[in-house]
Amino acid sequence: MVNVTLFGDLDAVEQDARGALDRANQLGLHDRLSWFRLLERHCPPKGKLQVVRAEQDGKRAWLFLAVDGRSADAYAAWYSLRFGLIGDNALAPEIAGFLRDRRLSRVELAPVEDHDVIASAFRGAGWSVAVEPAFGNWITRTDKGFDEYWSRRPGQLRSTARRKAKAADLDIVIHEGFDPAAWADYESVYRSSWKPEEGSFPFLRALAEQEGAAGTLRLGLAYHNGRPVAAQLWLVEGGIATIHKLAYADDAKAMSPGTVLGEAMFRRAIDKDGVTLIDYGTGDDAYKRDWMDERRQLWRIIARNPRTLRGLMGIVRQRVRALVRGKASR
Image (cartoon, rainbow, N blue to C red; front, side, top):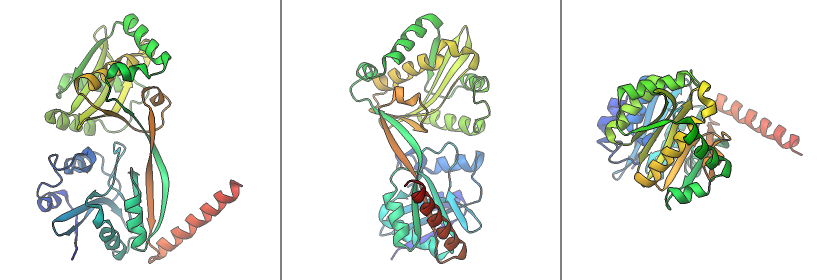
């Protein structure tokens, strides 16, 4: 028999999980309770936190949701590079059935890396499911060292890094632990960049503090004459380096400080940290193609419940849109 329980607060989830959602038992940052605590504290999605947990014969699975009325979305935010079912995939149908019986009309989950398990579970439980592209995700494999990786980069990128490193005379510092002064420099770069209002500084600081204490933080800063002009926030864990945020000061663009700092960060991650894969997060920004080799697709799953009126209406609208798109493509 499968036991399915709904939790409305993270303290109750932690008590029930008994360490199963801690760093020691979850390899992925976005699968840990600490990640959802950061979201809840600093940038919670619209709706009420609800966590569905299924358990059978010692196996467990969790789905973290933001529920608003009869609709539910992934408990995720701007900074969420992945979202999905946590735990044993075999319990996904039980969670899908539980949500169906609670009369939710729509469940939308993104960004999902492998949509097959969740989409199949919801379809099997009677939901009407659409799977759509959400974001691109660029990666590169780096198991042969930095020199081999760098030799595969476009000539223009390598030339720019070489010329600007000499001409700009930048000082590069990479922090592995959280340092308040370095963090102030990071925020200074962002405020003088092309995206000063992006996201939540308190969230990022809390993440940097948390990961700095765990030893996974790599905070890179480039200085020109003592002034910070470029910054990159990476996390390195389990042989994978993930690039979370980066920026450079607008008025320093001619020095290409982001490129110079980027080369140093890649070299450090590959040759010192020994990572075998680097993940550039979400988005198809053109510059990522210069640094990366492979694009992966992240997905959005939209499940609608035909047992509810609103779900039925959503299914009809979805089918009409699909029909219109089909005609337009002919």
